[in-house]
Image 1 (cartoon, rainbow, N blue to C red):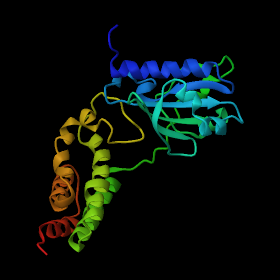
Image 2 (tube, one colour; image 1 turned 45 degrees about the vertical axis):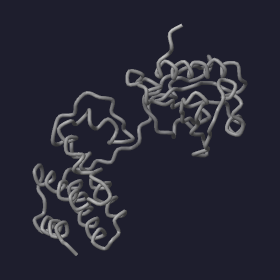
Image 3 (cartoon, rainbow, N blue to C red; image 1 turned 90 degrees about the horizontal axis):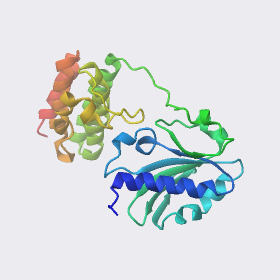
Image 4 (tube, helix red, strand yellow; image 1 turned 120 degrees about the horizontal axis):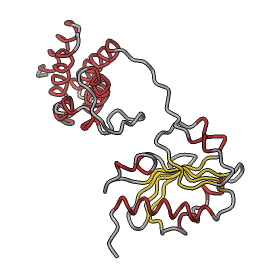
Length: 257
């Protein structure tokens, strides 16, 4: 028999969980999410399993407290209750998964995308797994540029004060996050699976021209001034930057003491 690839093992594991749950009292559905959901085309050797188990009212806590329904599928070597609703978990064959247990009434309040029903009872309302995306706050270019520029300034001030970790987060974290949002105004987004929960996901595939500069935007702990200058160059190349803020940032970046 041919050895299964990692993506095949993931899908097989999810199917196995579904078959076990089909004979378990209180369960009404198993929902795959992300690459284990409706985006299986992007499954690869580095994917994990994301899923929801939907149970009848009153059963949720029992499924959270006793993971026998999972160990019956395959032995577990690590588990961590990372939310009140579920776990991050490692099976003995190195399949990693994140899952949550919900009652049907809770689904209306849980944001998620790319869902696929793996198994369900005849009475389960499939409309409950329509994608629930997080609310999107409209942020225009002026706001994004303003946030990025002020992040650069605050970050460089902290760097010169000796707060290098905080500085790196402001410049190579917060300011970069704003640039990721601005990329759509600089180049046409390429076809790829967009993750509404994280703009950094598959950014290299979606915005290859901007992605070329990422090593300069995120050069590391000791190189925040260089990162700030690279980000400033990007911002003033594509948008209007306050001359006053630019002068402050350049001065702080090149300051020796």
